Length: 302
Image 1: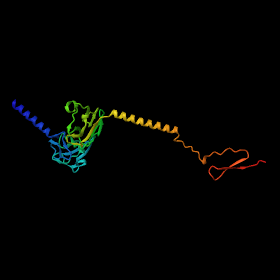
Image 2: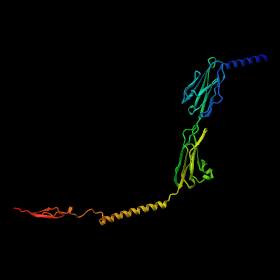
Image 3: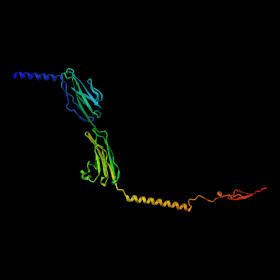
Image 4: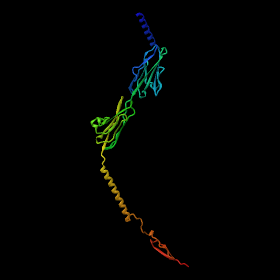
C-alpha cells in the first residue's frame, strides 16, 4: 500500500515538472528602479522557466498609454538607440539615462514551443533630475507693518522640487512658533510653491534671504538678497503736505493781488491806438506822417 502511494506521488511530481517546463515565466529583481540623470540603469527581465530554445524578446516603452518599440528583432531602436543594450537573456540596460526615459517599460517574451507561450512584466523607471539654480525674488525694502512676499521658482528638477528659505544662513521653519529666533515673526511658508509671505513685517525680519530647491537628485540655491525694513514717518509726511498746501495758497493769493493792482494789464495808450474823433459836418480829418498829428481839410457843400 505504501509503495502504491509513493508511486502515485512520484507520478504527480513528474507531471507537475513537465507542465512547468512547458510554460514561459518571467520575473524581475526590481519593479520600480530609479537612477540619476546620465547614469547607468538596468531594467531586469529574468526568464524563470522556458522550453523554447530561441524565444522572441521585445521591449516596449509606454508613454501616455501608447507603447513604442525600444527593442525589436534583436535591435535597440527608438529613444534608446545607441544608449542601451540587452544583457542575456532579456535584461535591458540603459547606459546613459536621460529625463525623457522616465516611463513604464514592458518586457515581452514569446516561446512558441511552450504550452503557455507568452508572458510579460512591466517595469516603472524613474530618472531623477537635479534642480537648477532657482529664480528668487526678494523685495529690497518694506515699510514696517506692511505685507512682503518672497518667491522662489525652479522647473527643471524631477521629481518636483521642494523649497527651503534661509535668513542670514539659518533655515526658516514652516512654523515660526517652533523657533525662538522667529517667534515674533508673522509669516506663512509654502514648501511646495516656494512662497514666503510676511503678513506684517517687523524690524527683526530685516536680513539676507536666499532659497534652496531640492529633490532626491540633489539641490541648488540662489544668491542671498538683502531685505530692509523701514519706519513710515507719519508726522513728517503730514508736515510736508501742509507746507506744500501753504506754499500753493501763498502763490494763489499773490497772483490775485497782482491782477488787482493791474500788473498783468496789456492796454497801453499809444499813437497807433489813438481813437479818431467823430467827423463833424463839412470837415474831414487826415492823418499825417508825424505821430498823432491830424489836420483837417475843408469841404463845401453846394
